[in-house]
Image (cartoon, rainbow, N blue to C red; front, side, top):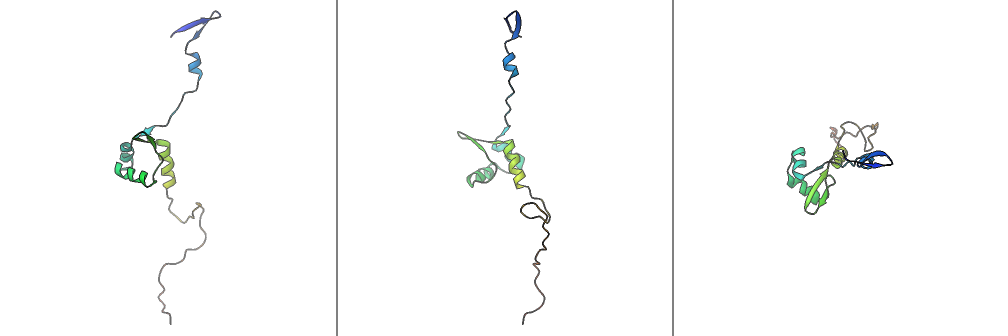
Length: 107
């Protein structure tokens, strides 16, 4: 490794560089990669972008990319938990109205 001498001590040229925290970026997927993951087509993704649906995406010129973190957020938002829950996720204690037709005839 290259070093330089300063005040009778050797200091690595890269010492300051190595002390900086590493820059981390999210992985980017192409529409083809994301379509394969969702088991759909790139045309479906293009339609979702056109209709302002689907996950957030990055447009770099003509290129489209999807951040993995945005895909996770989108899938989490689309996740449905079956059961007797209201819109806030709380257990709904009010009885449901019956949708069955009444067998008694009205006079």
